Each structure stands twice: as structure tokens, then as C-alpha cells.
Length: 324
Image 1 (cartoon, helix red, strand yellow):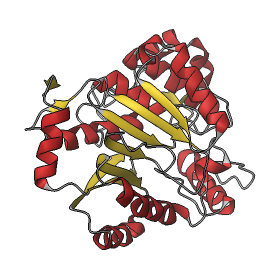
Image 2: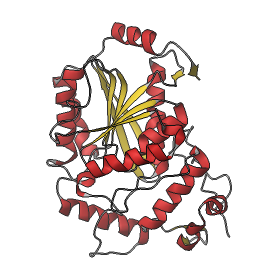
Image 3: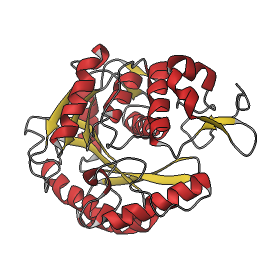
Image 4: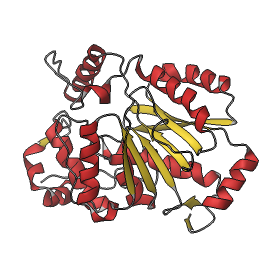
């Protein structure tokens, strides 16, 4: 098997990302032999994965989770969104850096840190990576009962996740934090990859564009964005409406959460969201650039805690074991 050039880095990934180097396909195939049928040579004569094939992407991610994160059992229905592991890990690493800024430069880790994953999905990927990398605890929420069942099964199937991830069904699709967080809950950060599209037709256009970028071919018959059900891809009003709802609702939980965060896929939405945060009178907000390969995105983070409140929070919750 021909390997990619040794030592080459995906330089846009976070320095702590375990997949900054090109994939060791020989090692991954040993862990997941089915990957053999998904290999192909690219235009440079290098062996790679057919990233336009959802089966190949899922097998690759299963192998990556096994090799780099010690997770041997990760499965979910094929119609659900299959997340890219390096990109999801990057979000968590940048969140760790954000927490470190409020913790004298050291990353707090362990069970004293709790994250809330809005839209945990059938794959449960953010909590899995957060537990593996930083031993954080998580609350994972979703509006889809089938996705909740799938995430719960992944937690049950992997001993290292038990007791670390609490999965909660959001019974009201119009709510985000209400009905999930209790008055006594304290969450150090929220994490969210909101649905991008306002309609299924918009999602289909995005899928055709992505397939063309990967293969160089147009395919009008493409059905979905590799995989992903309606709730994972589409929301009324698109990404901007979803995030606006999140900001509006976050005010009611201003003392329950240190950092509210979400991905913003569309650069054109950034200024609108900044104006919404200014209107909400948050104490601080930050835009954190993030990207894998040619895909550029950004994390928006905001807090209602004053500098003094932040110090009290840090002293009470994070003043224990840390890593630098």
C-alpha cells in the first residue's frame, strides 16, 4: 500500500489535534479491514479514502476513534450525519484554550468541567472526544428520540464513557436550554454545530457542491449531504435563526453557564450575530477562527459573567487538577 508523504501536516488543525499528520492508512486498515475496499489513488498517485462515499467516511472515523481515542464500539444508523473526527476535535481543543484563558493559562480537566452539547446527534461525537481528550463530563441533548437512543447505546457500549455523559431528550423543538438545564445545573461551556440550511433544497444544493469539490463531477441525483436526516441539516430560518434563538434563550441561563458557544458556518452571518449579542448586553464575546483543509468556520463564544464573577466561578469549580 502506498502511503501519503510522511510528516506532512494539515496545518490548519489545532496543534493538539491527533490528526494533524496525514492518516496512517496501513495502521487504520489493520484496525478496520473493511477500509481496504474504500481506498483509491488520487491524481498525485497517493492512496487515499473516497471521501464522497459515506460508508468509507464512517469506516475511517471508526478506525480513527479506535486508534487515537481508544473507542472500539461506535455505530449509529447510516441515515444519520457522520461527523469528521478532526474537525470535531478541533472545536473542543479551542474550547480548552478558552477555558485556560480564565484559568491562569492552564487547561482545567476532569469531572469538575461539564459541557452541554446541543444536538448531540446519533453519533455522540463531541462528548466522546471531550471525555477522551480532557476527561470532561457532558450533558448531551437532542430533539430526536432515535438519536437519543443511539447516543445512549454508544455510552453503554463503551465503559470509558459510562458515568461521564448524561443524555437528555429535548421534548420541545422550539427550546434549546429550557427543559434541559435545571436551576441548579452549572455548565462550563455549551457546544453546538447548528443545522446550516433553511430548506431541504438548500441542503441538496450544498451536497451537490460538496460532491463536485471532492470528485470534480456534477451529480444532480445526489440525495443528501453524505448522510444526515432532516433535523440535522435543516432548521426554519437556517443557521442565523437557530443562533438567534440560542442567544435570546441564553439570557435566562446567564448564571448557569460560563461560556455559551456555537459554530458559525456562514461568514455572512457573523456581523448579524455580533449585533444580536450586543443587544443582549453580554459581558464579553469572542470569535475564534477554526478550519480544516479548505473549509473555514468560526466559533462564537459569549458570557454574561463579569470579570469578578468569572474569578469566583474559576475558584469554586476549576481550582483543582489541571494540565498545561
